[in-house]
Length: 301
Image 1 (tube, rainbow, N blue to C red):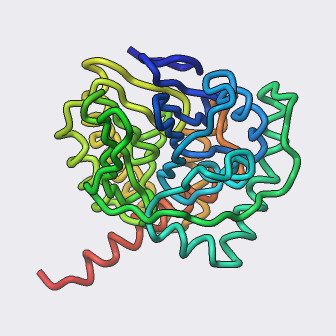
Image 2: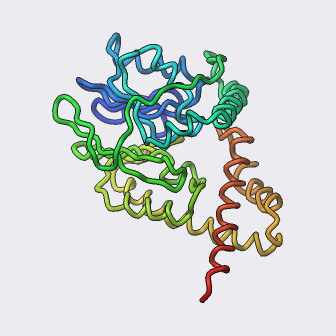
Image 3: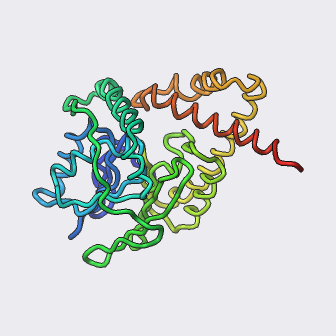
């Protein structure tokens, strides 16, 4: 089953904000947020969280990775709930301490405000992105133990970024995968194709019943595990597409990206990823594949 709305997904588990850029919430004695979406949607997330928690505070905000559309409202959340602990890969701290990264995150967040208006969002947070501190660095498979016996296992799933984590809740068979799986038909490896496929292979071994994707949908039941396996197949298909276009365009990065954009983004109905962010990510994906091909040719047979 595909769920493309916000609201209750399962008992005490919710998607809040906007389905294209959700924040997930596990309620309980120690409520947990997963990701912080766009900065421009901060007020929308806040309302959705308060509608569920009332005056209670989230205990944790667990980040899947450091991209602008997954950490945008983290500082806003921390201001609202100062006792909440923000956690993720230690590499996220490195990103947050890099001035060029903060400048890029701020710029992309500002660009997204126009996109939010096309989505029909009226209560937009126009304040610029604010950096924040990571309170906890997570270690793979070292569980976060919540009151009541629930454990959340952080899983290192690099490939989209080097700081990518997914979160597995075995007692509920819930996997918050972020962009360790494809999102809305778009392959999400950026930094390393092969490492991304390896992460997908690891995730495919889990007995997942609820798969929470970084954008647009939640997949449940038998389709959840099938979606992970299909992500592997679609990612390989994307690799072959870029390899073919590279031959046809003689390795011209700009022309390859233009052809993929025409096929994958231009005719896609809204809501969709802001154009600048899409082009940036697609350029990185194509460049990663071209560099992979050159590296393979350089290795003696």
